Image 1 (cartoon, rainbow, N blue to C red):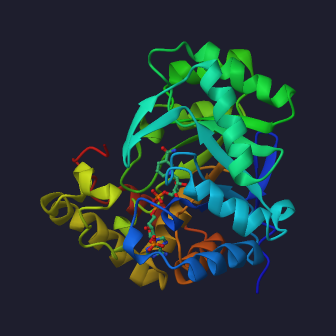
Image 2 (tube, helix red, strand yellow):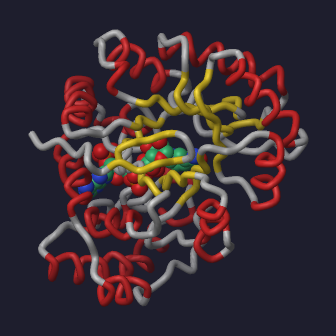
Length: 319
Ligand SMILES: NC(=O)c1ccc[n+]([C@@H]2O[C@H](COP(=O)([O-])OP(=O)(O)OC[C@H]3O[C@@H](n4cnc5c(N)ncnc54)[C@H](OP(=O)(O)O)[C@@H]3O)[C@@H](O)[C@H]2O)c1
């Protein structure tokens, strides 16, 4: 086993291993008919052995079961001190993959208490607002989240998928530790709209979600079942996948030349976007975890970065 602890990145006041772990597919959303609890447990344990510290979850993953999984497999297992637990509030599940926004202060407080219970902890390391509620002023939601720090229930707070305006309004009340948004070779919006630059200028860490394009960029996904979250995503229709195969092919060509996997190339590219950037690839199995953590050892040269900036882009929106 190799320790990756030298790969530390600083997200605001949080210091984490540069490769995080998205726990969502361990309970929900992708390939749910293929979840093996023994493999999931082994994957969580091995992630810690490999030096991964940041585990990302949310109350709506499951709903609730993904937080409960971490409560039993991490906290009950005596591994709490080895990780940083990052969870989220601000959405209420209506149906499996359907949510309502709730950014009220009341919801934030109740959701935090419920997450603490499910995670079996008295303190959440990073509490994130999953989505900004368009009907509630960000000042109310963010103010309630900041109060959770004062109450000792939360160590740091972050936003997810927030606009530049909401980032600025939140920052004016209490410093953000992180922004979590989609960033990958086929989802580069935050590079183009100035959001990642704003994070860098304001000492805000950036958690890159879906860094593998929800698995598609790895070349391992050719279809998704009707029960999969991705089935309703515009990029996962049969025709969209056929059209975007050219992106996978371009990645495969470069990865093969470098002797690495598509996933490793995609993650090395995300890591190269800045010292404040930490990808949180999701997986439920050790074989992918090992590959993903090994991407920390890959540095892409300038010529490869230029080549990657010229690969085809998706014309199909991400949501
Ligand atoms: N804030 C938000 O709104 C938001 C939205 C989406 C996701 N997230 C967070 O971000 C995390 C990561 O995003 P994501 O899970 O959507 O997408 P992702 O990390 O881009 O892709 C995950 C999928 O890729 C597969 N995979 C992982 N490593 C692989 C490898 N080396 N080779 C081949 N396939 C591989 C996994 O398969 P298996 O499942 O079979 O292991 C999984 O289904 C989530 O787990 C969640 O914590 C947050």
